[in-house]
Image 1 (cartoon, helix red, strand yellow):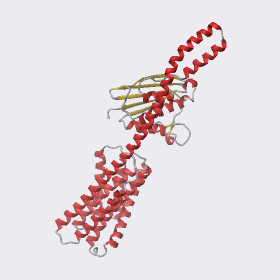
Image 2 (image 1 turned 90 degrees about the vertical axis):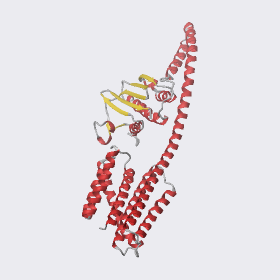
Image 3 (image 1 turned 90 degrees about the horizontal axis):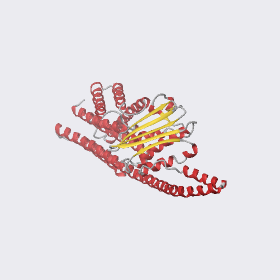
Image 4 (image 1 turned 45 degrees about the horizontal axis):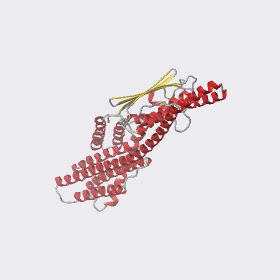
Length: 429
């Protein structure tokens, strides 16, 4: 193979490696390996696939090396082993399809220029690399469509114009009488421009997507804050009512005792029971915490649940309202759902804030039966709810996501007769 073709191949292989990054991000949600290891795995793909093609140039060997190295890359991401294998094979098949299309497309589009075998081979490399990256962008777009995100129109216009212009310039350079060094320099420069442009596009799209998410998140937070404020105002009115009515009922009860009126006594006793049912369970001064806890425990007086509540938080905590509703709301729902199934009903809620760290401990009685995802046993992260419906299991999953966003930790401890969840959140972000 000519030295120019080798250099062009190495450059296009770098573009393909960058395409793999985009495809992996489209198929897998998150990574679980340190970035140096991830970079090393991509470097391994680039080196081994390049060596296999340059020294062996046997389709089966190149395919096998590509599948194995792409599979190694997939190990950096969180997913099932079956999905990693399938994605690795699909990526390699996609690149083979891109190469086939490149050869056919190059022969049709540049028939007059490509009489030279060297130019034909080089143009095939370039088109294959650009097609591979374009396929990666399409997969990324389909993934974003599921999240209701669509890239701007000019993004696609630039994606088509820049690589197309690059191909035309490279073919023109290869057909010119320029020196070898000049041709290689121009080709390398054009590939550098494409890589930088793709990187810039990726950054802009990510920034645009984050902006949309931030706007949506702000609306959700505003909604939850408004709801919590309304709940708090309602609780405040009840507190004021309870404070005043106790005095009046005490006086009425004394009068009723003197008059020996059973009817008056019975009426007043019923009012006292109603007042107890509107008890304030949390009065920490933090609107969000007080509103969520008082709202969730509002019906426990009728169900005879023994409560142990110790809340010590400042009026303002650097945690988004949406995340607090997700974490505390789901934990309270799960606890109330669990105590409804047992005779001995009790819930212990302990929340403390100290030096930027928020600890949440929720413990409750339960029947000892734990349901695991897909029949798995003994794995904390596969514990799911036993609620009916299609949404079971999403409560704890959403709690984990919110906890992870604060560099926190979550421990679930099912024991005989009790079930506890311990959460630690770092608010100094």
